[in-house]
Length: 579
Image (tube, rainbow, N blue to C red):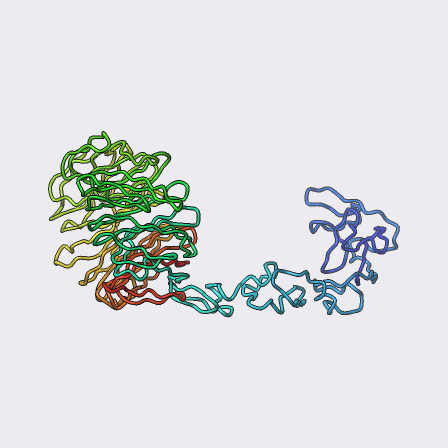
């Protein structure tokens, strides 16, 4: 290193004492001038005998190094102490040049880099490992971009995917990205999925119905009556872990499913025959027509409880020893010794025995959290909820109510345009925001829009987000929120204008999925369907989304094909990523 060491008049400074890695006594080293100097810009004053500080203090400088006029420029000499060359714009090795090849070699290895160089006193990445690049020009994080999956740099730096697209294998593809698809009851005359629930252990439960028979394992599963039911446990990767069937001599229906304890699934539904089988067990059906709850697992040994005329409709939620859901009784009845009034109710069952513990009158379309239940109902006349009286503003409005888990109405909100609103679904996110999917009539026309009413925590009025202002049919069937994003899905016919896109159905009905921000702006939307009538719903998992329902036409995705049976409908589940 070439250094000009200097001394102020009277300063004794041995050669080398003023190198950057050696302090200049009480003085400071100036890296630009290569000189020792008074600290903090203080002037040297010979009469004061040193450097005069701003507070009047003096750093004394000893004499003994020759004659100089007071206040004159410092004397200098040239000296050099060689050091390994580094990337710093300095001639460290005293050869008259700075930042030669040795400086590039001195640049430390950073993530993903295969070649580095020194340029203008700074280390830079010259070459990255295959598939990566240094797109932000920040040396410290190396080759930070994986070009095969980076939405901001897809395939090359700066090649950003548009909103609603994801970078997959260095190409921007439309969201959601289908990762896998698994047909269920494939080969049956007809089959459809009616419900699914994520178990939180990288699997989910699926419930559905089928007619005819389908191959399974080393044999066939055949419907006993006009329509039987199936229950399955599927992994988040689409692997079918187990599947079993149940049904009666009549036509049976399923309304929902929830993941139960120890790898089981609990299904709700109705059978219309004198006898019913669940897995390998046979049961007598009260009155040859009854609603039921059944717990089924891989190992068999199923359990079933009958609820007679009490319609257990779902959705289902297990919290501790309680299984809660909603139901409807056409007349006052008693189930498992518990009285149930006519009308809609919040039902609490024992999660272990499946026997009814409590029934509290509520509305019918609902959502349940661990701390409360929420319902939405259409009302056309004065209605009293949570100590308040509500009157519709027009033909029909919506009434949203929060209930305690004991069935006490503790808060209510009125939403609607004042013309005619009808609810389709209600959802509550982890932050407490309530969202209601509905169809809403415009005030001045008979046209109906698909909308989502949003009630934020602490708000007394709802915001209306128009999913589609469309003269064609559209229905919101799925709503869920996560990480500042909201997903709205449903079914539609014809053309569906949503956000800046217009989706077109391929068949009689198609499905759609859209992503929104929390302010109600559409980020992207996509239609998924076949040439036949399609119906499906979306549910979140830790890895992404699960999409399940029935297709009326052939669909090929993720290397698999769903083909409708003889009656023209086929059940499926598929997994997709949405980010």
